[in-house]
Image 1 (cartoon, helix red, strand yellow):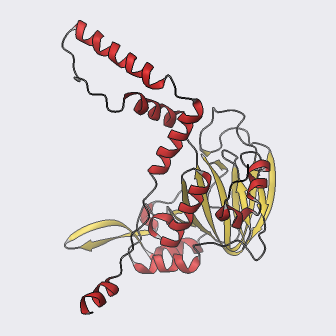
Image 2: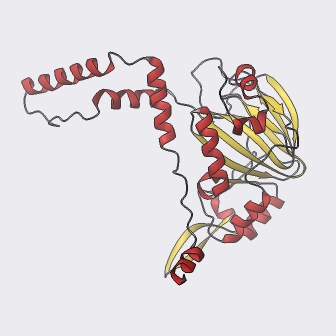
Image 3: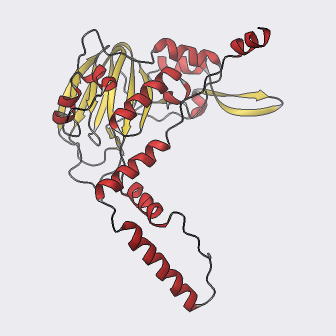
Length: 308
């Protein structure tokens, strides 16, 4: 059945073909006519840094071969006689980039309105939670080691180019996100992604990237999926939502009665629940935790309204 996904189509072309041939199956590079649009670019990153408000955990710097402490790219400020840590230090960030570190701007959708709108649209089309991260990497440098993400990722290259190596996904559900341990999984795709192109990495597929062709910047649209813990939490909530019971029964009989009431409630509530409904509920719960759309106000317009 055809599903209208105009936001996804801007990056992968035919959404139906993408979902049938690539989604959760294999990585691929897409080259949209006229280039892939990005709601966030280097000028936006410049503006965020220049604002003076950017701080951890929204800003981080990484280097595959050697972790960086936050003191190497942030500074403390005194605000109303109190010291506050973690503000982005542009001079330190510039020096770290010159030394080969990667700049990571986290959850761009939370503080950049156009990115937030794009993420919300993609989330609505896929029925999954989505976040956006921006990576800026010098040529010949690598920000993260070979690792797996607990998400499908659309990498939108916005500046320069980056050499990517994507490796096999996990054999089963017993895997962990983060740096790959043990033998390196087999490589399944090697590509240099140019500005205006999009790389799709299926959930769990190991990957790494090296900057190429000047300063490289890409926006990672990270599409989250639920796991067993999410399903379990929603199952509990579905079974017992609205239940009111004394929290600490005083004797054996009352404890047994409480246990019986819980069992009966679970049986009744879950009798008609299907696996598909549980997955939908868990995905909906995860999407509900996404930041609400920002309500941007204009003090200028408010002042003009008072004068009219």
